[in-house]
Length: 592
Image 1 (cartoon, rainbow, N blue to C red):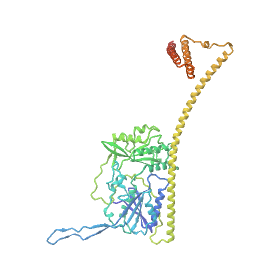
Image 2 (image 1 turned 135 degrees about the horizontal axis):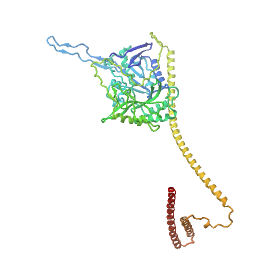
Image 3 (image 1 turned 45 degrees about the vertical axis):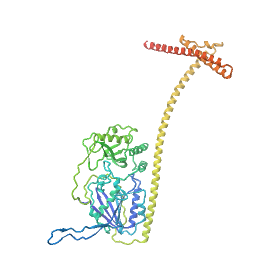
Image 4 (image 1 turned 30 degrees about the vertical axis):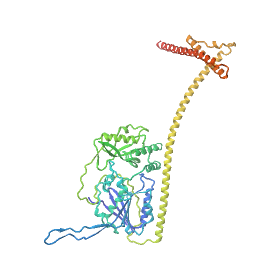
């Protein structure tokens, strides 16, 4: 197939702008050798990176590429026959190549934008470019230099692609199959002032490198979630404020247990046509099958009602995968239905258990299988492409950046214009630094506020629990108070009725009259027990004061203890007899 279309947008006095249609994505390539264009391009990159709507928690990822021109030496004459009598053929001497020590072009790619700096025609390198390349918060990634992309790329089975070519990484990670490099273009003259269209398309590899996912760390994920959940306005995520801290905790636990999943924000379109910006976990989940662990690509959408209602899970097959039909848990569109989702219970259900159930269900019945791929053609054309599904890599379209009006007449800028541009660039750099500092402060503040919200939520639950216990205790005390009040009224009425009936001294022993013999015996045993207790206490007091001798104290305590034992034993038997009589009385009333 033919290379993708390359279109020249404009030719300015300082640079050229081209666009490349790569699998439905428009890549803008700016070719220049002017320092002012470099500063403006870097300024636009920083302006976009500090935009308020940040849809990925990646730091700024910049693809880097360098091109050299290969020079050959040696006899370039064709081969010849040795003599008229000898038909043997002598091949030409081998041509040898060497690389010039100086680079001809430096490519920088961010999102859909690529900047090509023609170093061999650039008068000087601005300080803004040096500061940009030395920024510790920016990830520079490429093939063979700086942070090598091959060390971190993985296929859908989780296998390392360290030994794979760049074309294979683009095929698997970006789902852009059929991309091929032409060695002849790589060995062409990169020191030319006007680069050809064939040389422009390989430069776009720098953009593709920046689009492939780069390694992350937990701190970046926490900052991303804090930033997204703390946003306000029409483009903020539509989750309930009281559940945002739980959503953040669910995603952090999920990424901690399954690092192959990555939290993102993207546009979700409902069946009724509504579109909304939601959080998702995109990546792969492990699936053990016949002793081998495979990685199944999935997307877990957190809908507006999450976590009170279950998320929406889709299987996301790559270009060389097909969904199994029919499948017990996966529809032909990729929608997953599991008992865990149908029996979702708030707040105990979570994403970690969901992914665990997904892996177990897929292990019993894998939802995907590989598509048979045709063999490679013997001589593929340079960068041969075939239309696949649109890539799922998060594309960040840059706003158009007009560097000036179109002019075909080259002229030398005066000193005032150069000073003005440098001053503007310095101001933009200062503003960018202030914006980055403000963004870090807001992210830290949002992180602390979310932590504080979680602590307040826990304290609210503890206070509610304490209030409930206090209300229950209050009701119990009120019931006891009512009982005491009733008993007090009964006693007051008895005192009023019996007050003044007799003025004689009442015998204490005859003040209480027992209803039966067992009650009388129980009263006597209890009185004797308490009387002996008082006697022993008096003996102890007398012994301590030295009134009672030691031997008499021991004899008296022994006799009293023996007598007290018999009274207590008799009291126990009387109590048992009273209980038995009471049971018989209740049974008799029930039968009657």
